[in-house]
Image (tube, rainbow, N blue to C red; front, top):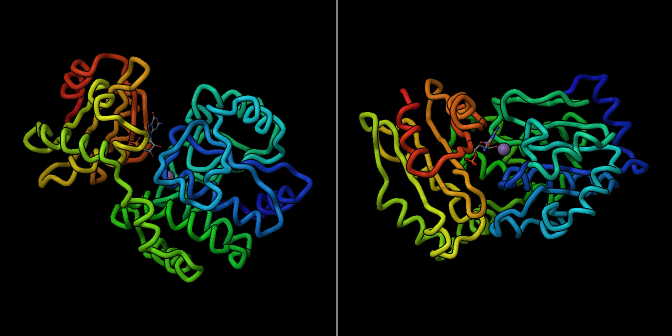
Length: 333
Ligand code: 5GP
Ligand code: MN
């Protein structure tokens, strides 16, 4: 958490004269959108206007969140996003640890901007920013935003909209309060968010009971040919570009597929390989269960990526078949 001196600087930065923006990572997920909008609604309750800017579009199942449709998507509104980032006095960097994680378009604008940068994030090895609150033991950036507000002494300003958004990010990044870093503290905060009006049944239904037919068909295909190697300890799933096109793939359709590999008895690590729709690379998701299987290190070493010990992503610039062959060579549990 920020120290006392940092807090007093941050307090003085949070005033209506300053242009405040909130940025998150490329391919924003529930925690990215939830923490960004949650913080925005808190700041609004404090009398401060903040603009949320994301590098590219995000899944439809997150668009129910209050003000989700007011988010500036840099991919679609380049000039506006560039200007907003360039003119910002204060930039919150939420749910990512290094400007390059915001993608090739936005990263240089962040690096050039003179705005004071405040990072709140739970990924490993954060870059240097003006203010850094980084904690890899916390399951969701939304929980960290809650702690930040708590430390500001302004929990009472977390209104219904903020509570819904923060709840959503904690729910999605903990896989529905199941993953390892889910703690008593997490549940205490979740309880407070429910007291502030967040409705667990409504939020999980709005977020998760929204499967498209294309997603279900893609899931059936992927599950039908799941492969388990290395004495039953490593699961491999994949999709080709052609399959994605044939099934009418929409953004977010394959979210969470990698977890099915991990649900097989005895499996310690799951990897999901997907050809990018437009460019010639393979997007990979890794998941694992314990400390001994550090997929962050694995992805950093072999697949140009990173993330957390038990959840990481990467990219590989060979064809799908070679990528999976190489993966089998690299993986060593
Ligand atoms: P996912 O598999 O859901 O895309 O990503 C899992 C986790 O790994 C997320 O926390 C995400 O931020 C991180 N991650 C995904 N892709 C990359 C990447 O290319 N580089 C880095 N450093 N982290 C990634
Ligand atoms: Mn997160």
